[in-house]
Image (cartoon, rainbow, N blue to C red):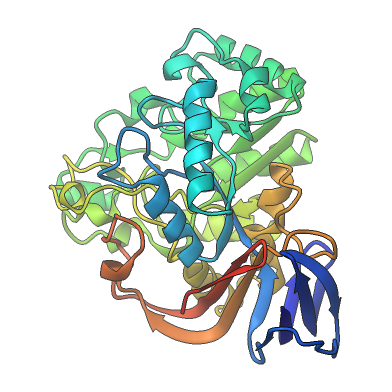
Length: 423
């Protein structure tokens, strides 16, 4: 298969040039200009962009246990529709992915469906408790890529310290859901003018930043590797920025809703806008964008967290936190960061591909290189489209971005040379 005349963007090498890509048996065989066709399937991609396949290091597929919200099959379909060639689902299923049997079940189920890079993140502690760390070596041997209690923070600092030393000793990383659960308890949206107007209990920015501050001290003491999930506040970004200046081995992600929406978008009790951490202020949004620009925030993850339509139509106080993220992530990134001039295209692509792959050492992802699997995303940078959540591949066909006009769209996702036509 020969992909012709595309603008190829490879952030690993800062390559940005009109070229061709020859794929043979799912592997990239040649990259160059005017590659001759020898009875190959030729796909002319003039005017399109080829990037490494998108990599999501933070998502929730819900299976096993919560299949009404999402299954591995529907989650993978949604990810591919969003341009992702690799995903890393979190452990907060039922049962929790804290053992080899549950981990193996998920991996085998994914293999039956697609060759998408499927790299599960396992729990840090058994049952998300505060007592016992999981069997790290066993889980790594069976396919775990990282460890996180996402959805329920590890708040016992003694447990966190020992877990960090143990997990780092196996050359693995903790992804932290940084939250002070006592401060957050009962909150629906950001604590501020909107929560006061609606009479809702708010979640202070201190909930996130205070947790990050204490976790950074553990990281400093252990000299460990550590990744902060879904960073949303100005103060959190300041703390992580300083930690990096101090030489700490920390990385961070944010999600598209934190640079696309603020608390001001919540006009009433609409639970489509209910996420954790909550949508913050304009000042926080601007700090998130600045963090992306200066490298404090290394990558963009979706935090795809689907629920049933019924659940998301409940009053905001009762509805669960989380939104579908796979199918809007690229469009939101291009629309709100690239087309606005806030982030160069190659930097935006890096944060969606090479950077997350590097953090988790996903060797066959995030790059375009001869001899590697052809995991690629084809994009029309300028196509304008309207988000229609009713057509999502995810079971969660409801979104705060429903009806939004976005600029930039996935056209194909290519996984090990297999083409999935999207738009």
